[in-house]
Amino acid sequence: MKRISLILVSAILCGMMLGTSCSREKTVEPILRAGMLDGLGSGHTNMTEAFEAAKLDSRISIRYITSANIAWGVLDSLDVLIIPGGGGSMHTFSLGETNINIIKKWTENGGGILCICAGAYALSHTPDYACFGMNGAQVVDLDHSSRGQGLCSLGITEEGKKLFPELADLDTIHVMFENGPMLAPADSAALAGTPAGAYTVFATMLSDVHTGAEFQAGISPGKPFLLANNYGKGRVFTSIGHPEGSASFGWMIPRILFWCAQKEDLALPVEYKAPALDKEVIMSNEDLLKESSLYRTFVYGTKEEKLEGINWMMTHPSWSMKTWATGLLYDKDFEVRGAAAAWIMSTELLTGKKDLEAAYAAEENEVAKAIMQKAVEHLNSLYR
Image (cartoon, rainbow, N blue to C red):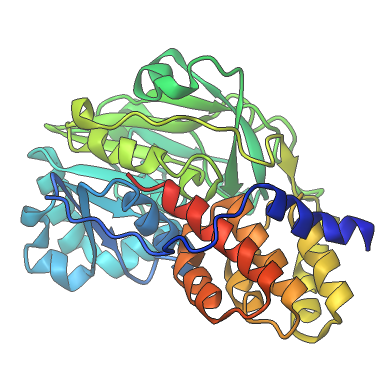
């Protein structure tokens, strides 16, 4: 129980200011218009996290768009299209050749695209794969796409330091990765006749991710993690991982959107603060089995078992916990509710903010309420 109580105690010691408003609304004229693709290939967690991260800059207006919207000409009212994680070939299938050609023409004439994880698969020039052919890269080791997940170590290149000067003095950063593609320059034949230029790398993968005996070691180190290219008059930015789902790095999404829109001079600086979990943590097969087993724990377990599970999640970058944490905010035991709020604060889970505010309003236990308030205040502090 000593280790369990550390979750609650550490959150309380961070500071409490009872009576502060937990909602934060801004009315600012948007200067960048973004659309989030909501389609067959858009994973719910991937899509909603990137959507919320875009809203960290109040000058960005973002809305969900569908393949039907694209066919009706919605891109003409946007500066940037976001193609989120989920399923790469499903993005291609659900958009269809007609809409992909609309996207290509729009980008060639000056539009911007941010593609993340599965979006990076979709925009690649990979032979024998259903893809757009827009980001100047092709997928390496496509047969082993379920490579693994975790906080990966990244190195920032000189070009990356220009775009993200807040990170210029850091040797490494640690960003969430979840089965994203390993990329290499596309074959010259694949690029021939297209408006896609060669890509520039902003961050490289340092971690060796090869979960499972069938995966070859040494594939991921040195591969690009953040990269970008010109496509005619437009720009394409590719992220194989998830800054939007990583504590301390959500602000990178607005920065990238301004770059894609060719308005990078309007991006706001931030004060970088290292996350609570600031080291490489690659989930092993045993970790992934443990993570999977915790669903039953959180549904049927005792208070002590749930607290132990949340405590384990504090040191293991879980993708599933992103969807479980909000349910735990309404658990019957106040210790569990407080621990869930502490996890949301530690990981900066932006998609949990509305539930966190609702749970705070309903909370009657003073200890849990104080932790929830601190968590809400921390998430609100990220918005500019």
